Length: 133
Image (cartoon, rainbow, N blue to C red):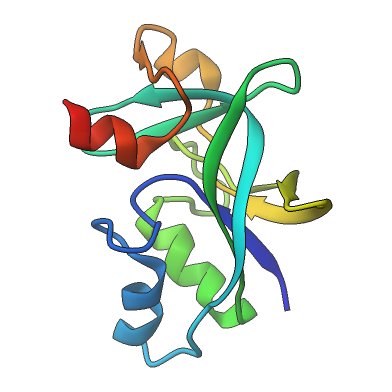
């Protein structure tokens, strides 16, 4: 079963909560592994953030889950990632720090050039940023 790192609206309690997404499609519930971080920049895109991976940048906070592979198409649809079609987000695998372990996780970063003028989120935590604005 694959692992996923969620940093924005797919986090617990957010607009696209990964648990609710699975439940809506009668899929197995994701299993929380723990809090995680990936190096990069977080940008504010209004109703949601975007992650620009950068191994030299500060950590971006999120959650690591083990998921059933049948949930991936649902998440692709939420992020509007479709084969052969260019979109803002892409699906990739990145190493994510989770406690003392590094776990290869599915992540949905944005194309950096598409968000070049977006406001950077200091501190790398979407929920903290959203609540403070």
